[in-house]
Amino acid sequence: MRKKIVAGNWKMNTTPAEGVELLKGVAALKGEVCSCVNFIVCPPFTHLSEVVKVAKGTGIAVGAQNCAAEAKGAYTGEVSTQMIASLGVEYVILGHSERREYYAETSATLNKKMEQAYANNLTPIYCVGEKLEERESGKYFDVISAQIKEVVYNLSAEQFAKLVVAYEPVWAIGTGKTASAEQAQEIHAFIRKVLAEKFGAAADDTAILYGGSCKPGNAAEIFAKADVDGGLIGGAALVAKDFIAIGKGFAK
Ligand code: PEP
Image (cartoon, rainbow, N blue to C red):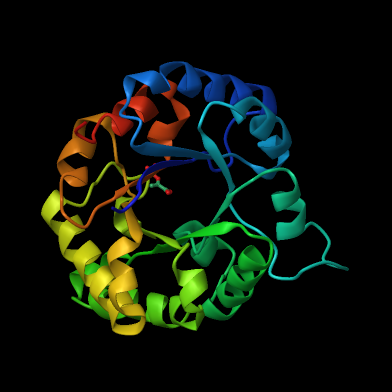
């Protein structure tokens, strides 16, 4: 049985106090959702300490949105996975398209970040996805395959067993344009096939999340697809009742 996951990427939104209130709102409504759904919230670094404390006992896990590529030392402004994990954080989002695009994150950087994540027992949520021009030119299978092979293929079988993957078509992130459930299923099945080429049957157990303008109104249809195991949610994760409503997209 694959894990069902609804993860919220808060991006650079909310103050720490607002973030705690948001988490409390999610926790208060969580009982309305099947207990089979694993909720994760990924606030900014500044919120992690307090959010982890408030999340204790709620069944909601906490993730970071990024981490340093190095273990420690003279890297001004960076935050190491040891620092993050020491707070009780369990996940880290890596390879988000905004980081690839605005912070020039390459596969080489992401390989180092993955290594750091595993070294401190954080579970990576590794994002892949094509840009609009790559979809329109039909190159998207190659792009996604390369994003997986250049990074995920370097993991050991033991590391791979923990990995969560998110398919986030860049043209659907924050744009209000969602991939259709069929488009999502096509790519999720493809991702699973590429993973299986390296890791065999273990790929059947990998949670692959969809991300990109996922909302209460479209989550159920997307989550119903065979290879979609949940969502990585941006905008809608900032409203507790919407985030919870997305969780309800999983039939009990
Ligand atoms: C994201 O950036 O991870 C995301 C899915 O954003 P949104 O839901 O706002 O499109």
